[in-house]
Image (cartoon, rainbow, N blue to C red):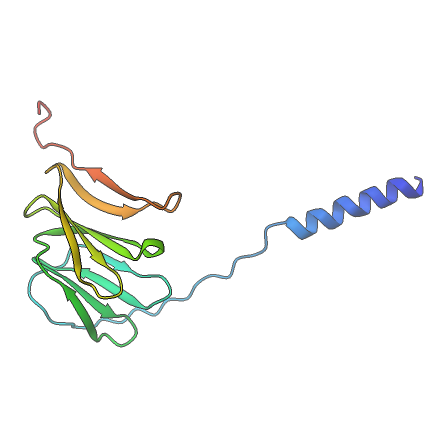
Length: 148
């Protein structure tokens, strides 16, 4: 082999090593059972990345809790039968789907104040933020009667 070939092979090996996937460290979780009180059952929980806040859907409202301490930080009112909570941190808003009145509640992530309620199809059952886009995604519920 000539010197140019060895240099090319060395460059390919170096480039391959530089761009090879690195072992990803596993996240560690600590599960603690905490009673945060409040009325109504729960459906979904949504954890906000980087803040420690956990959004807990209740029968008629969403509780916002500090995950590490279990302290209630706030409340998003008038979300009857909340199914899903999606957070769009880039835009400073969150969204809930409310089966009780067929609405989506848009709220401010900093103040937790309701920005507006949007009427939606009763077939929408949940909302989440897509990791591939910056837009919230919704899912239609399947009708119990296949003829509808």
